[in-house]
Image 1 (spheres, rainbow, N blue to C red):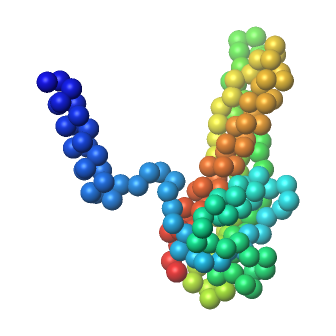
Image 2 (tube, rainbow, N blue to C red):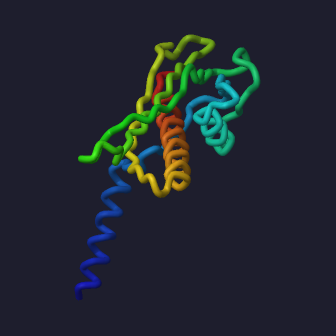
Length: 163
């Protein structure tokens, strides 16, 4: 009897969520056919945005801004590591990684407001003097994860811009 109730409850939740227009976080549909991406070669966010756009079948990544309906310009990108927590002995216990990305959307027909935007993402990472190589790899993985999150946020914002 308990299994039937659980199944009916899960079915009811699934029906409710599907009928109310619920979408998973980060889901987006880009309303443009052609996009130009202006980013430096070393830009992590630029690489991730390029991969995400290429995976979208209905959007073409063009080589010139004049051939695109909209351009994504990655203006700045950087990460900073600051001390977040000190131990009683004065050694570092935890760092805070701050990843900032400046970007702007431009369109040929000026249907998008061309205002510079900035994303700031923060993550905490513990520090250990014994595992410096492992912590360095963890820091790099966190920065890559923040770049991926920033790229998703930029594309979600682009999908919500007025056409």
